[in-house]
Image (cartoon, rainbow, N blue to C red; front, side, top):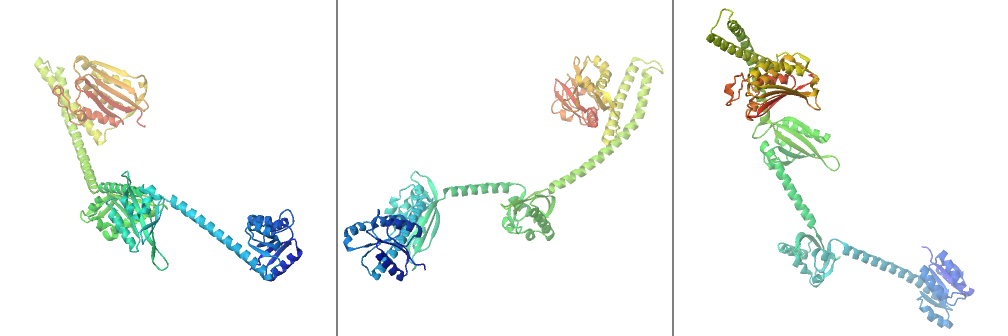
Length: 636
């Protein structure tokens, strides 16, 4: 241990020498022996001794008393005064500075040692006490700041007399009541407890008296009627012998947490209700052991198991080994790849429904670290859909076969009928021209009936033959660049005589940009125009108008052709039937107009053969507008 350092200040060399000798014997280290206060102060700045022995009556600007006061206040170093009996006035003055000791000249070695020892010990004790007091003040201030600013209520009570030692200011903020009443009656806080909870809180306090801690949640009611949720805790404090000396507790306002919990419960119930009402099986597995943690009602119904039979189980607990291995393989694929896995057709054997086919999607649910924590599965039972699709395909194949047989039959029959029919028409024309000899009026009328019926039947056979060729894909096409205007003009010429006879006006409306050629099959487009114009002329009363309009559709590579009449029109219920084979509309007018019921059906197929489309707009009694579109080029 280092020796204590002492500075000696006296203008008497004999005295300083004696002091130095005595203290050296005691084990002290003399830092310096000086004669003035000014020298002493400068020396202390450098050497910082543990004590100073100083004569009261120093010569110079500053005497020993002034120097001692400065030294202690500045450097906190204890000063021991040396004085003589003749310096009593100075001694009285020195008392004011409260020195750490006096030594009266002449003195013995023992007196000097005891005085210096006591001065140094007292100074160290004073410094320790000062530091302790400062620490206590700091801790008291720290505790005060904590208790005044803490969000919780902190309390301490005496278990013997139910006296409140301390209650933090948070009580007034949370309870909205004064702390004063608690110091008068610690149980007065019960007045604020909700009436449905007060009994439970009192029971918890009784538990505290048994030496056990309590932890509970309850409600309080503010003076304005506001209800708040509180989380209260309390526990006993024991001394070293195990006796309870205090109760300490805390209370926190947890209203926001309770409201959040309620919102979460409602949200979970809402989400659970949605999931349980989705008609698809929805399940969740943990990614660690692949055990079911959730299966909705649709899934339970599909699998044939209750929720308690599924939760916590793996696929191997429920399904056959082969199926379970397949399901597990797909699960692991999701977990490792962290990507959705789509299984379009997943066979599964259920408990009640037997073999089913599911369309399943398995989705990874990642945690905050980016790893798969859960696996979400969504399965739709597509068994009935697949069965229906299979039946539909079979029915379609059967229909195609039947249609092909029908088309072949019609084509063969048409060829068989055409030969004798052409002969009938030919011989009827010979008779009408009176080549075999003259005919009377009755004979001419009969021949005209035969020709009309024969030609009508021939048109029917031709339509049937063309339609069967289109349906069987045997109708050949020859596309070439042609002028749409010329096609329209040539089609109108064939109807001019009949239109004039019926008192109708035929018009054409061509937009200026319609001088571009179209890539079409001439004969088939003429047949389309012929059929539409023929129908318009047929169903338009005397004095009406039939208009053929054509325009380029803006921003497309298509043209639009319309055949517009002011005829009888078509009802909205009949429009969907127009393009169906062998269909004639029933109306007050239909009996007047003969037809095969094939013209519009064939027209539609010929337009579609050109990659176009056709539709009709009509109002009964106000006429009809048949519209079809064609691409400018068949290569687009």
